[in-house]
Image (cartoon, rainbow, N blue to C red; front, top):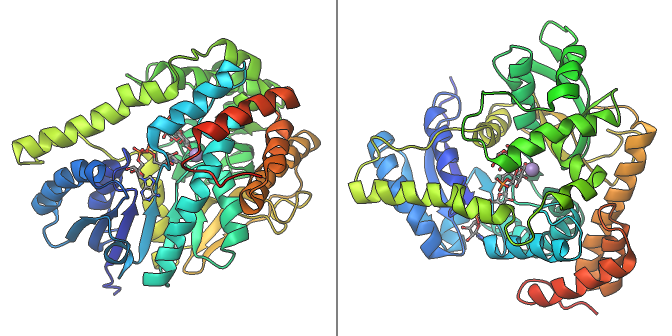
Length: 442
Ligand SMILES: NC(=O)c1ccc[n+]([C@@H]2O[C@H](COP(=O)([O-])OP(=O)(O)OC[C@H]3O[C@@H](n4cnc5c(N)ncnc54)[C@H](O)[C@@H]3O)[C@@H](O)[C@H]2O)c1
Ligand SMILES: O=P(O)(O)OC[C@H]1O[C@H](O[C@H]2[C@H](O)[C@@H](O)[C@@H](O)O[C@@H]2CO)[C@H](O)[C@@H](O)[C@@H]1O
Ligand SMILES: [Mn+2]
């Protein structure tokens, strides 16, 4: 009988996703038992607001689990088995800038795609590399499951700058979509699907989806998505309008290739004009998140602290939290569960650059991900992936070489940006806005 219990560190303890992850960890004690839970953040005040509530929760529901929150790297990263990383370098203030500057130039302003994603990527690279270095210094046998975005650029940077690190970059978008697919075909959840998927992060397609008996679910899914996208009518009370619109827009993305099912993020690359026409340059997604998720999460934490009890705490598990715990479980117990991750291609998508960081199904075990072969990308996908992957590589080139030209090339090559002069105008504004975060570009 395996009586191991694990030590988990949440890096970015002040994240709005932290309470949901803690709820899943508490509900998963049979599947993935923990002995220690730590938070680490570089903003003590932000983290404390969440940690004070979670301390009450842990005392009431898991007093046997050691809990602490710290801003000290050695305290945080020592004696850790798994690091769950979810930092946002520059916080929402900089996400707001990432979204608003491009929109002023009539270009998509978005967290992880286009110029916004490029700017975010240059901020995130040093922050995530620092976490990897702390982990390797204090707990060299630990695994890092990294949600910190933009995962595509962070993944290329960690492949290049820390090639032997035990970091696995992940994304919950395909997971959320597969939970929807399961509902569309009347199955309990994503783990009841067997799928083939390939692409880059926030830039991928399903080519095959079956149930566990091998029944082909693609015809039923395609018929639904062609009409509704991934929007589940009336099954999502309170879902925000911007997300409803994104799920519905998948129908138009699907129309471009009815042989596959698309990731929702492709709308930004294939319908940028539509996105810009439906955006408000003065009130973007960050404003919605600050008025929504951030307010709700920090309000609930304050309520728990004020009441001195978490008996009626209003946080719950989500696909975001269950996914990262599924990954830790698969690694901890060598289960070989088939799970998506962003990994070095090395032939998984045979006709794409072997050094691309692709998002494909892997078998997860004690040695981490084992890639599954997804065959060749079709011509449409190959063209899109090759261009976008070069953008992501140019961003990491710009970071490594402190190169203005490389970053201008990345912005100009990006499918979302129509013109090299527009790219330059956006870039020059972003350099000023990111002066506290980016390397000085020559
Ligand atoms: N990969 C995915 O699919 C996925 C899904 C959801 C969220 N995310 C990402 O997770 C992250 C957290 O999202 P959020 O909305 O909760 O953000 P948030 O701003 O609420 O929390 C981020 C936390 O990171 C901390 N932080 C920033 N820089 C740091 C550094 N260098 N070292 C340590 N801590 C640092 C901040 O102080 C903050 O407490 C973001 O990067 C977001 O894009 C990714
Ligand atoms: O705009 P946000 O901050 O709500 O979400 C941006 C993230 O969207 C995807 O993840 C989640 C999202 O976090 C959650 O709010 C919900 O709406 O569902 C999405 C899919 O689970 C995306 O994968 C992340 O990379 C983004 O950061
Ligand atoms: Mn994602």
